Image (cartoon, rainbow, N blue to C red; front, side, top):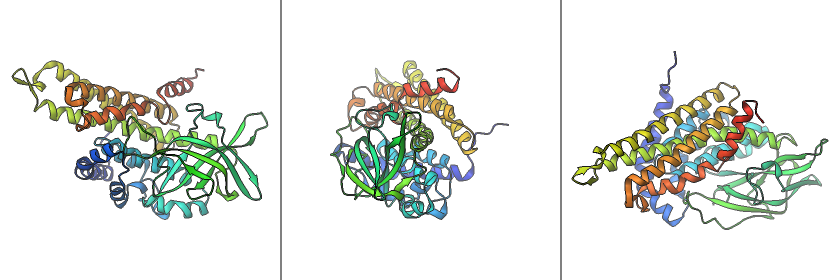
Length: 384
């Protein structure tokens, strides 16, 4: 028998985050968004709820939950705002989880408690200005010199990298050449206050305007050899594993945005009148919203299935790619339809659907483009 009912503890978490998003985030986030200001007050409240520590064990300051709990929280937050949701997603799946999965006991004890408590944020420095999807073309280098890594290079589009509470960036860098001639890529922890490490000015973005995104530069940055995360030369495999988990989380966030479009549209069509009738009485509007709800339902099932395999310890690369592809498409399609339903009001920033529309596009790009997801799915089917 298949039962998709959420366990009691997961449902309780979902309802708690839903209430928080509606009562604490929704009334104020529009102002942060328009000012392009990072919402420290909201992040502090999320930290007090334990959201940043959901999938981290209690030994390291976390809540002792699982990754699916994080996904549920992301979905509920994104129903209201994606800037807040991506801050949590990146802070956990990209900032904390690489340390949690691959760090030494000493590294975990040093970094994880503050990250799990939400007192500090970590970032993951993968993407570079000259290469997005081709992460294997990493140009940032790190060489050993007197027991220290000396890092040179740059990274682009890095979330949570320039806040007042950012503690570190985990950087992918070329540390040598393998026997077959390919680059040896490793991951190294760089504390935010390290000399030579600089954060560029914040980007002017189409969406996610209340989140933190910067370009980073490394000019002879020196960190201890012990800051190597995981085994030397395993950086590529580590970030692929990190991205697989992250894609499930981004799928959950995408479902939240797509659901938020349904929520807002339902409220609007029950109030808005045209030609003497509520517009929700017109079949063309009913069909639009029915299609929107269908997309949400399908995408939610896709990320639930990927999360289920992940939690069972089964291979889930294909399912993660499918979930990310289906859910990001749903978010983009639903935001477009919601904006159309709202008409001129949908083009105004004061209405959430306008913000949703601006936020949706990046979901088809970040943590693996839609084209990359199709490539991964094809490979898992034995093609290519």
